Length: 279
Image (tube, rainbow, N blue to C red; front, side, top):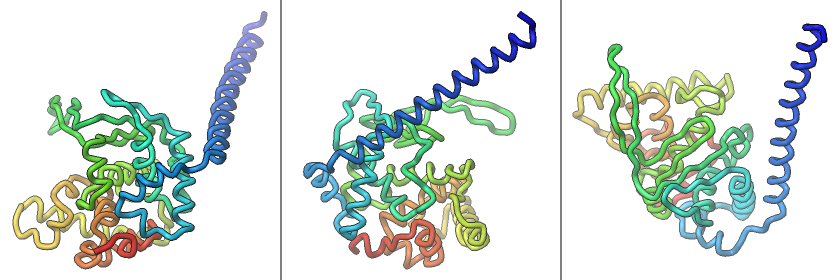
């Protein structure tokens, strides 16, 4: 067989194989979506949601929409428990807060790139390589959650407490804010927003990030920036994740201390969280 003919056949075979894989993934995803569509939301699942401080103030239309989104989320993502058994409560609560962030964000659709949710029972230490001036060091860091392009890690002990009680922090909101940030291909504190709104977003969010960084570096005269905390000064991506937590968990305090910041987040998430959360 001539060399070039063999090469063409090889490439055609590889192309057919790649097409077959893509078709299988597409078909599997559509089948899961159909299954989610035809699976009713159980009363016991709704009882989990009723224990959260956010679900009760949603409108009937919003409740119906988010329940459908939770089912889609639960069926299309792989949940993996490490030293813990994945429960229906975990799927419902993690799905609820993940989908709450996207409830009115039209461009995003149930985190299509996200494949796996890994759940640990309690805080876990991971090894990380740090670069400081060209000097690389390894160290263990205790995490409450973590996000990459296709995987989210959730520590259930923390997540469960924060899901049922307003505590400023919410690890599920935090990690899925990172996922939203990455929807445009970069995790830089700028989620997918219209170009016309970029200047205002940068002025407000990055302006407050710079001021917080200065206060955090000096570690004094925190004033209103105490609400955001030092971790938000880590980088722009962490700032967006933390202020997203405050937007959903402490909206009244955020609106009072940072009205422009609150309004930018409200414009992006398209939800008035001061009406969603009681004072």
